[in-house]
Image 1 (spheres, rainbow, N blue to C red):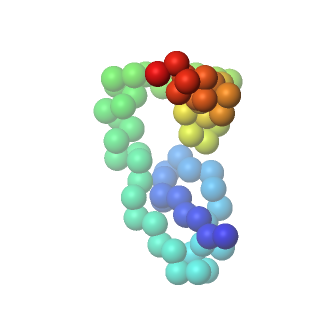
Image 2: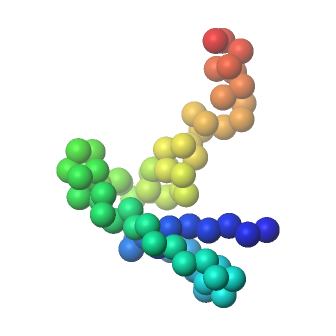
Length: 74
């Protein structure tokens, strides 16, 4: 399996193996950070938005059962 992530300044993923395969990310979300934090504030440590890859989309509202229940209601 091969995957890649952006070259984010605040990123924590180790890209050493990906770079060995020739992957060279160029995008950095930091270029948008000032505008986003100005509009929404900094995320709070200890929250889903801060602690999980995927932010709010990795929370309980997006668990398989929750999404399936909403789909049945639609």
